[in-house]
Image (cartoon, rainbow, N blue to C red; front, side, top):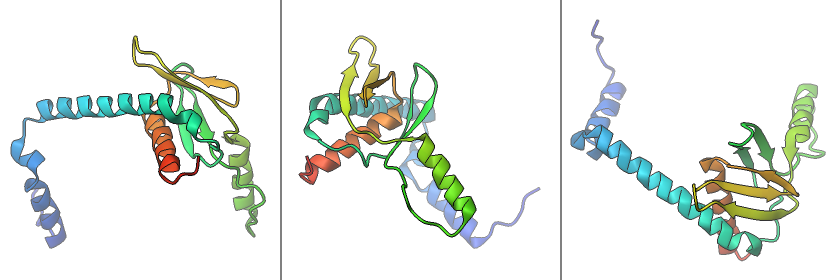
Length: 153
């Protein structure tokens, strides 16, 4: 059953139809090109981390949800919420639970790029996190880039 589109819906659909991606179509080929570009970006970020991670002295405020391909586990990194006070007991309990799961990075001991297969691993606080996910790689590289750009090394 066709329904009459609202003006907002029509504008949204017309905008999508006006994009280069819609006009070019060739969706499979374009998707492959995007995948290659994304993979190249992540690989460059891995090497950037290897080249520069020692130049940053403080990683304690790096927020990251790291996924380890080796273990399949998620790890939460960032500063603890500490003694933030909330009047709500529910919020206090949630913050306490988050603090218990959150790991503050005190030392970034090693960054390892396996050139044979492209896997990337890090060692934080003496603990190895192997085969970390692409989003974590981009997050770490962006953090280093930001710190070096702000001369906070």
